[in-house]
Length: 113
Image 1 (cartoon, rainbow, N blue to C red):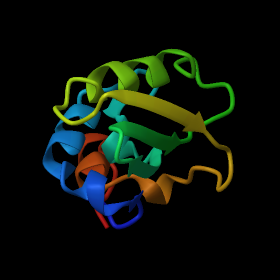
Image 2: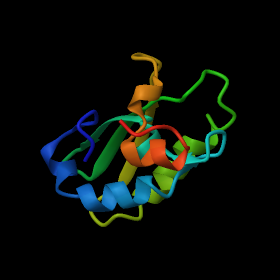
Image 3: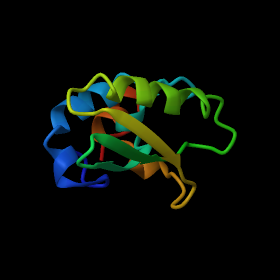
Image 4: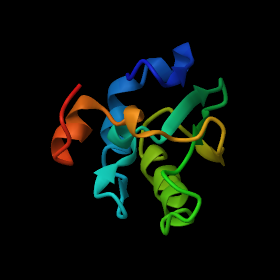
């Protein structure tokens, strides 16, 4: 899991599945998935199987602001052990280009860090 994502132990146990599913959800404005783009800030899974995801967008005018949370819910519900998903959008801290992963930077043609 990325070091800049706050994650609890219960969610960390599903790390591989969470990453695989989040890499399938693309921000069509940028042509990169939400995980490598750095839009995910926090993942918390409670004992009842409810997964809370705190995320942001690259811009307040992001055209996929309505569709991305719906896609995240659908993808994460496919994981065994996750019964429900709640997505919270935050604008603080604001997303910065430095949140893009090394893989994401290469995919976008940016110099890797």
